[in-house]
Image (cartoon, rainbow, N blue to C red; front, top):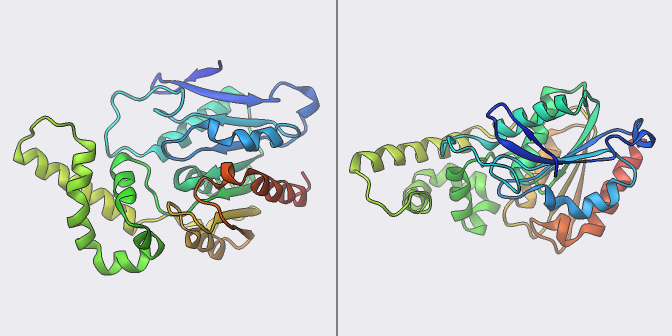
Length: 278
């Protein structure tokens, strides 16, 4: 199995399809980015279709799938930062210097794809966001907070949070603490300090979402009407901010729509790629 060592000497797993096949040498590489708690295997249904024509790169983020976890990772460290750095290292090792296309799933994979499209506009030729959004939940603290929110709060997140942020924090912090810390007893000072870290992370998450308005490449945004994790309003919000974008809504599918309704997702993706002349 293919692995590489990143700058932290962690062994990270990747898969490269058609990378050394001369018949694919002129075809644009496509990089697929998975979400928090997922892995490269999430895209198996998309790979079946895409690898017939394109060079494809997928990899497991640190601590995901077959990749090693950083033993020195802090609970407040951000997965998106490490994934961006790890991907850039992998592209250098594989001598992929661009241009390339990006497909990102969920709030983390899609968030990284958005960041890369803004950082490297000359390299990113197209962007496809699957059930994504602009809220950054890329560490255990933020992920626990997001998962504790009821469906109606996520669907009306911006309004409810602006009106009830202190109440939400009071209700969720004890559960976040319990979900993350082990059962051994800590001092009151430790709990107070840890609660402060939780509060800081959540406030930062609420107050500083991603801003996709600087994305200039052709962008396809696919959301699902039954998505409880990244509700459809998030996909529409990105569409409203990205000038050169197309929005598709999938009926009767949830957050894992690319697997649940793979034929529908693949049809839309393939049509978009064809429209880009690929």
